[in-house]
Amino acid sequence: MSTYPDDLRYSKEHEWVRVDGETATIGITKYAADELGDIVFVDLPQVGASLEQFGSFGVVESVKAVSDLYAPVSGEVTEVNPALSGQPELLNSDPFGEGWIARLTLADPAQLDELLDADGYAQLTA
Image (cartoon, rainbow, N blue to C red; front, top):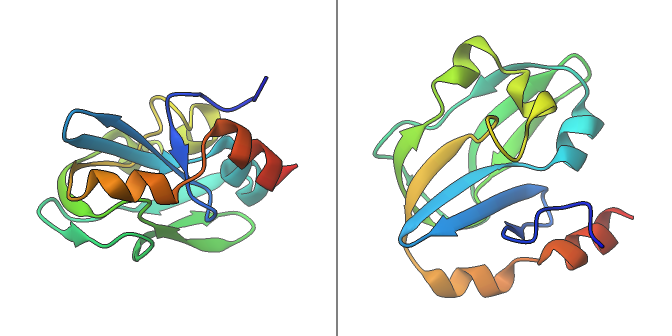
């Protein structure tokens, strides 16, 4: 049994995506949040921005490091998580829930096939 949610797909850069129809919600994994330590700032993408799969779209700053965020799928940003501006630590406390980063309109559902499932991601981080 994987410690990662089965309804998500994962990138090797430690981002996740949850797809609901044409909407893709993206965030960072618990593994990434734990590796970064206490997150103090998140640079969110702009609504309307076009993200390219595996392209950088922002940064996460922690007490230990600054790390780029990479889009697990391509699409246009339709919403960013406003809570992260005041509570970036949500990425540590609830990375798969309240700590989501952005929602976008999925450009190409076939890109999901290039990502890992929960078991594959668990093997990557083992």
